[in-house]
Amino acid sequence: MIPSDANDARLLESVRPADWVNPTPKERYHLVVIGAGTAGLVSAAGAAALGANVALIERRYLGGDCLNFGCVPSKALLRAGRAVADVRRSAEFGVEIVGDVRVNFAATMDRMRRLRADISPNDSVQRFRDLGVNVFLGDACFAGPDSIAVAEQTLRFGRAIIATGTRPMLPAIPGLHEANVLTNETIFNLTTLPARLAVIGAGPIGCELAQAFVRFGSRVTLIGKHSRVLPREDIAASEILAKHFERDGVEVLLDARIDAIELTDAGAKIIRVHHRGERLITVDAILVAAGRVPNTEGLNLGTAGIQFDPKAGVIVDDRLRTTNTRVYAAGDICSRFKFTHVADAYARIAVRNALFLGRAKASDLVIPWCTCTDPEVAQVGLTEAEALARGIAVDVFTQPFTHIDRAILDGDTDGFAKVLVRKGSDAIIGATIVSRHAGEMIGEIALAMTGKLGLKAIANTVHPYPTHAEALRKLGDAHNRTRLTPTVRWLFQKWFAWT
Image 1 (cartoon, rainbow, N blue to C red):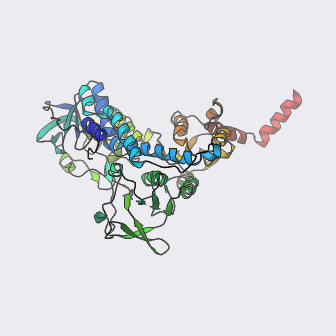
Image 2 (cartoon, rainbow, N blue to C red):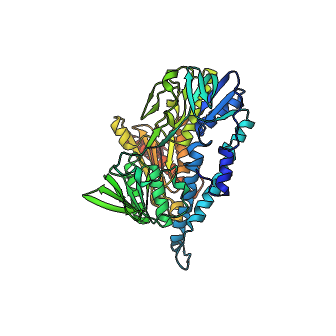
Image 3 (cartoon, rainbow, N blue to C red):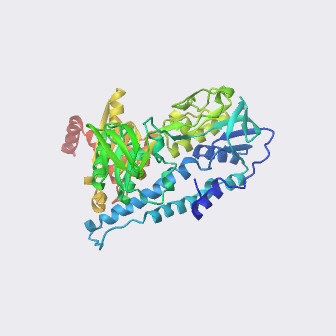
């Protein structure tokens, strides 16, 4: 990260002040946290608030991916891209705009950097020092089963939490490193819009940024190795999103293999793609969003007796304890759910179990997530395909937004809400929502699943009208109608005949 302007300078002053001096270590800490992303910050703040002596170690920037390279900057750009799309659709609402819609990309990026800097004090060195946390900047490594070395100092601990997160994976493609590709850690440094952009990877990061940049005016080619975008999500959701990408102008190449990347004398990049035969795609920039790699290098985990996998990260049990009983892990470093809110939830479990002999289990969490494309794709629990693969018999209830009044009025009828329940019951085991507001809606389903409430409870809940959330109440109504069996109808007929 280069402080290219006053906003970046403000950010760095919060998350990596140039004049920071590490404190003198205490004789022993109740908790030492390695990594100051979401999981690390929540762990340190929570433990300090409870009165523990806490040390927090960060080798780069406090705030981790979420603040610096992930949720915060990306969602600022997605909001700007949605504004562009709304203006271009304005004629549908009787709003006439004379002339072309022009995007000032430099101003869009400046807004993102300004907002990121505005948010940064919450993750700052100063805030955590004020909370009583000893903050150490530098590379950490285990010096033994109960000690960690950082910046030529040794910290002894009763318990430790590893929260070092992940980094972008760079696939083994000939010419990739020479092409000076972008990742989520560098794309937010741009000030000039690439005229032609290739995005490698059709998962959440690739899909979100491909849509944003095509709306800004880039000619975008999205290259995925699977047969559909967002391959882990509901099939119908992927299909709807692919149609929106086509509408926005994203060229989508699926079931594709990249054989090599070459450079031209003019500085452009030529991508050799095998997609129904070989194709040559010439672009000005390449964004790699092809997966994540756990940050375990340099931690000297073996010295502390901590097992890890180079692909999966630190190995933990259901209580987030590593093979060293003094050490726990939280966040992306040990979870298959690479989301900020999961890192937060894991950190709370790790602190409780590490410091208070807790018995909380990660498997007890009901975890929703959302890909913030337009429309958004939100999921909690199992998809239909996953339920089938596990041999779980389900009843499926689907509510298209074409029959939701607010969606019709807003012009956002593409999408649906789908709930899976165990066959013959109203027990929810999964849900998918595709809607501009899917991320705001999935929480109601997650709450119901956490509280062991079924679809009947949602049907009995009064929802405000007109809202998109009315779709959830209609799903409950659809389930209730299945309870009106021929036997129940016969009993009702007898009742009405008698009354």
